[in-house]
Amino acid sequence: MTEAGSGAPVPAPLAPVAPRFPYSNWGPRVAILGLLAAIGLGIMLGVPAVVIDQPGTSGDLGTGANIAVQIATAIGFIAVPLFVASRGGVSLLIALRRLGVRRFRAWTALKGMAVAIGAYFLFAVLYTMIAGEPEQDEIAEAFGPVPVQILLVVFLASVGEELCFRGMLFGGLRERLPSFAAALLSGAIFGALHAVTGLSAVPPLIAFGTIMALLYERTGSIVPCMVLHGLNNSAALLAQ
Image (cartoon, rainbow, N blue to C red; front, side, top):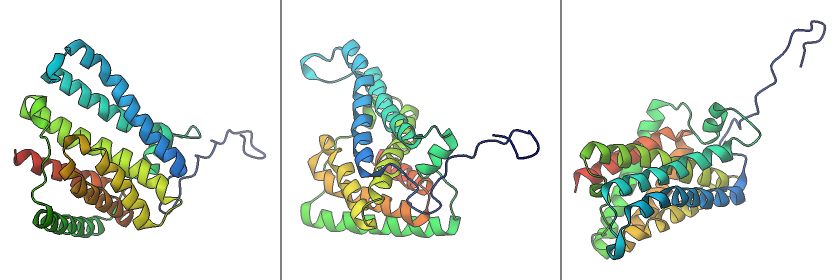
């Protein structure tokens, strides 16, 4: 493209990013298919480690294989949302912005995070009073040294799950659904996919996923969700 009357090249405009929430442009169908693709990619990348490890009849993987599987899962949760958000050949920066990686007002984020913590704590207390203490398999110890546990559970899992479940899934659902409905549906899927670690932990995880989605919309950025998710996982590590 050239500027009229000059012959000097004019850069092509960047693909637009929605100025208001939601920032996505892929809709519920692509969001659901993207989630399935992210899970599938993680499984596919993790299979070689399982085959090499040869767990046998016990089914218990070694430390190296567990680490490899966790990294493979995180790659799926990060790579597929970036692919979906890059539709139209946009830059990585715009793809991240479509997924909610944006600047945010510190005071708004702090208030939103405080409300989110309070709401989740209240739900956890009520749930424990009614159904008892939820039981969930502690997978962090399978990753070996504490620094590796922190890297995989606190940082990598928090970033990957927020990009996938809040940035891609909730963002796509929110294009067609009201705020709470989209948040609850994405939270339900988030919790259900953690059922393999303990069925009694599913309701609290549904609540957590729903609250994170609402926090994302309230702050306009997925970064506070990543921070709060990391803090939650840190508390779980310390409680082991």
